[in-house]
Image (cartoon, rainbow, N blue to C red; front, top):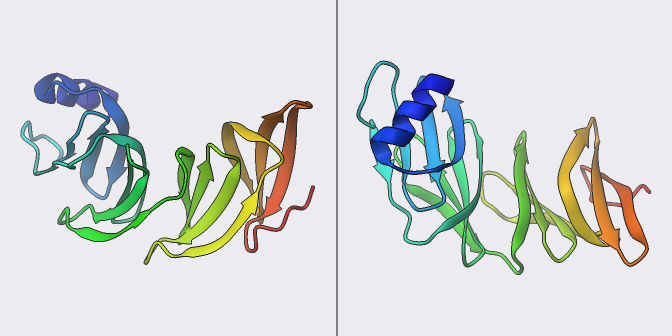
Length: 168
C-alpha cells in the first residue's frame, strides 16, 4: 500500500489528507480537492470526486466517505458511486472526526464533543468538554477518553459513548 500511495501522489500531483483501503479499492483524499478510488494494478483512478470546497477532515466507514469542508459542512458520500448521501452544516470548526460502528464522533475546536448517526448525520447527543481539545480521542470499550487544555493546564476526561455523559 505504501508504494502504491506514493505512485498515486505523483500521478495525481496531490498531497494526501487520508489514504485507506475500502474493499478492493485504495481511496486517496486530498486537502486541495479531489479524492480518487484506485483499483489494484491499475494506474488510472476508477472514480474521481471533485468537492466544491477545500476539505479539512475525512473519515470513512464501510462504503461511506465523510468530509468536513472549510465552511464546517459535514458530508457523507458513497465510496461506490461518489453520490452525496447527506450533508449538515456544523456549528463550529472541527478539531477531529472519526467513526466507530454506526456512529460519527465530532470534536469541535470550541471544546464540544458530538455524536451523530452514520446513516443520516443526525445528532444523537452533544456534551461540553472541560477545556479545548488536545490530540486525538481514544476509544475504550464503552467510553471515550479525551484530553483538553484550559487555564488550569492539561487534563483528561472520559465520557460514555452511548449517552455523552461525563464519567470523570
